[in-house]
Length: 339
Ligand SMILES: C=CC1=C(C)c2cc3[nH]c(cc4nc(cc5[nH]c(cc1n2)c(C)c5CCC(=O)O)C(CCC(=O)O)=C4C)c(C)c3C=C
Ligand SMILES: [Fe+2]
Ligand SMILES: [Fe+2]
Image 1 (cartoon, rainbow, N blue to C red):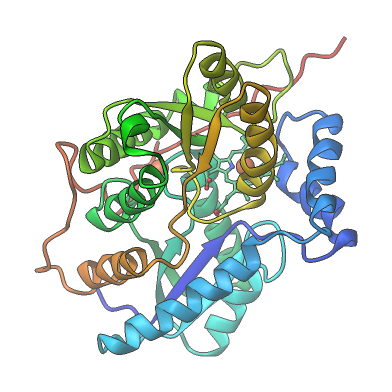
Image 2 (image 1 turned 60 degrees about the horizontal axis):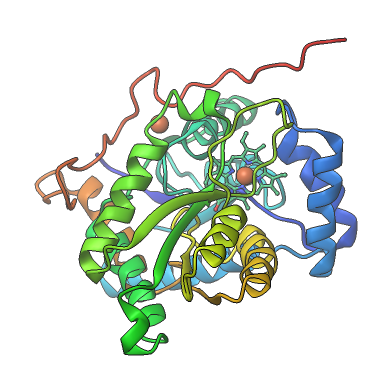
């Protein structure tokens, strides 16, 4: 297939205090999340001057990708469009159309498959294409990369750096906790989110030869009446402290860069929980613009440009589909019952 552009599709984030509430209203539109949770999360953003790090992280990612593609003779202009804040997807799509782009490959910044991280991004593309109208570019999402050697090697090197900070006599007993965004069970039932997460964690544990690991969740936003993925990272940290553990490494495997959910929910809240129970807390890195991660994105582009190129994947699950099946990552949110 011939492609003439790369589109980086992401979540977006506020860039000042006045952006915070309208941004969160965009995020939570159609989702069954209490207003109190929105206001609570707004406080987290205001704590950092109302600026989410995500937009700058995407600018850095695009800059690194431009260098990587140019160094490998891949001549694709890069566009960027978000779901929840400027620069919006529809504006990127309009720009692509005006520049004569006919078909684009799309790199989505969410690693794991779920409604929010897969299907909703594809729905966003369709809506933007309809809005842009005739000659809107065709957009094909790049496959998910949870078991790509580039992602696993990147996360493994972050975990190794964390393990190296622990005195050797305690290292093997250190608790390695992988965290990901919690989602409603009604969402996780219809996708491979948990299965993919478990496989990524297993592959990183294997690569780092650290068998003492578990997968936990963070950033739950639902009402107490709705079941979401558990256990919560802070509960697990408190339990580990009570059971005599000494060191905990928290690897935010579910996030590609240091989002607000990492800076606040982990570096602030989880760190405090660890301090309360006397645990040595080490927050492991995210992929960000680490060279092996940028190389992986280039390899995922190359395999779509050249069908003879082997598709890389570690472990027994093999490479994910290039094109999602029609029922991939479906989700119908439960409405709160009146009365
Ligand atoms: C119903 C599910 C979800 C609710 C409600 C929800 C609220 C919520 N999320 C953020 C900020 C971010 N979420 C991100 C990704 C993300 N969110 C969900 C689910 C819900 N979020 C999923 C399944 C995912 C995919 C996993 C992932 O990418 O980490 C991100 C990162 C996006 C990206 O990198 O592209 C952010 C940031 C807020 C502020 C919020 C409101 C309370
Ligand atoms: Fe989210
Ligand atoms: Fe999907």
